[in-house]
Length: 137
Image (cartoon, rainbow, N blue to C red):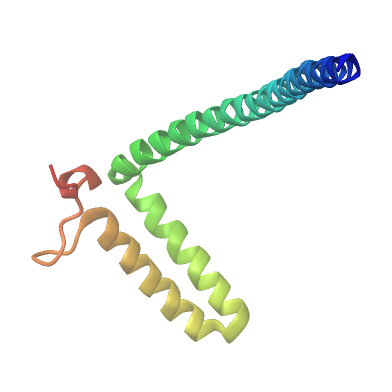
């Protein structure tokens, strides 16, 4: 019977050692997994922070450019003759190079008329107002 008792103690001892080594292995795996996840989180955070910082800077610059463009568009009436003449010259010149003098002159006049209408408005059809007047409130 003492052999059975020794054998029982040895098997309990082995089972106990296996439980301890299994617990230690699980703790080690959990620790390694946590460290790996921490590294991934740090890398992702650094990458997203850099992206958001650059994107925010680009949006701020685009907003500044758009604001300046809208302000210039609102003051288009101050430079009406220059805009009409420049539009007629550019459109007419481009068409004249491609099609000839008469189509160029006709297209230039048409381009100038469209520019004039956009700046000063067409009577009873379209009044050139600020773009802000057409935005719903």
